[in-house]
Amino acid sequence: MATLQLADSNPIILLKPTWNSSSIFIQNRHRFSCHYPNSQARFIPAKASLHRQHQQQQQQQPPPPSSSSSSLNRRQFIAETAAISISLSPLIGFQEPAKSEEPPLSEWERVYLPIDPGVVLLDIAFVPDDLNHGFLLGTRQTILETKDGGNTWAPRSIASAEDEDFNYRFNAISFRGKEGWIVGKPAILLYTSDAGENWKRIPLSAQLPGDMVYIKATGEQSAEMVTDEGAIYVTSNKGYNWRAAVQETVSATLNRTVSSGISGASYYTGTFNTVNRSPDGSYVAVSSRGNFYLTWEPGQPYWQPHNRSVARRIQNMGWRADGGLWLLARGGGLYLSKGTGITEEFEEVPVQSRGFGILDVGYRSKDEAWAAGGSGILLRTNNGGKTWIRDKAADNIAANLYSVKFINDNKGFVLGNDGVLLRYLG
Image 1 (cartoon, rainbow, N blue to C red):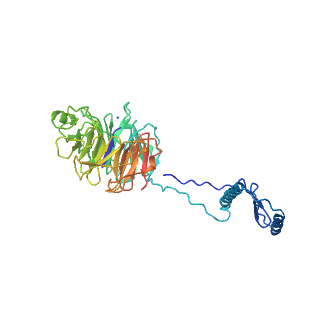
Image 2 (image 1 turned 45 degrees about the vertical axis):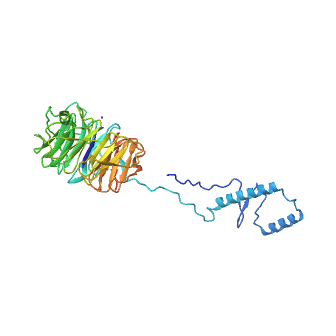
Image 3 (image 1 turned 180 degrees about the vertical axis):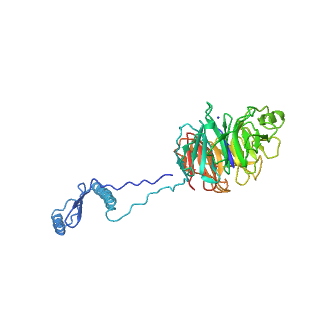
């Protein structure tokens, strides 16, 4: 599955025992004696001294203490006795209670990149024949390359993308075998047949409706490309010729069928906010305002608009591993469709989004998925999306996480703004 997001416990604290200022330890030849200057009780180790003290006490009987004085002495004795037990515990073998530490939840680590802080990362892909070799795209003409599986990245210069005085935004990348494709804005299409060692620029028609936001390598010399106005094109000769898979753009379809009954669709002029492709070639897209969504299946002549069944506007939509749909509403809502396939019936799933919007969901397997969003929100499910728990991996990262990409079961990445990249550890 490929997706594109467009950016326009209380711990126990233990204090280490300290020596009480009212107790002074004086080392004798064979033992320790403990003297309390503020107390009337004295501990003298010598046996003879104890006998003499007993005789003196018999000769000089002090008057009985008053009740208030006795109460004070008892309280002082109890307090000092407690101080002794705390101070002596390290000496007589008592062990301190183990500190309570919350077990780490994180299965992600941050990968630091050699790029400007303001870059927004948009897509990532690896060469299927060599999963150590991959490319990372972003704004400000950012293309990074890795040859160690994503542990380290280096800037990649492509001469054919630097001939003109443009600051390209590279939106999407896809590989099949050694063939790869890159699309960007302003309109640019790059193609490689040698796993990215060399990239060639493919000319495009100036009549192309909208900006290219997504591309999928589908076979030998073949690809499928989508624009933000709903145009879908396919090629089978390395991009030199493209055939339209839909007969008209989304604007034309909605404005032609003004009685379609779709809220917000009449006289629609705008673009997709997000577009997502399923493994079988079906698409789901969210309108730029988020007030409705559209679907397209191979063989259909037009996009099919759908009313949203949730109160809040839609942020993003995509495909679950079981063939159903997930839907993200603005403000942090997460919904799952009832059953599989295209539908308008959704059920809300409680999530701990802390009020921040969730921006994307990526499935690692049929049961495990990850959701990412604003202010470092990272959520995980192990039961297909029925329940979610928050992973604190990115809590201290001041960035929005836009996209979750799993290359396979063991290789995944989260892409964000300000050059933030998280790598899945498994």
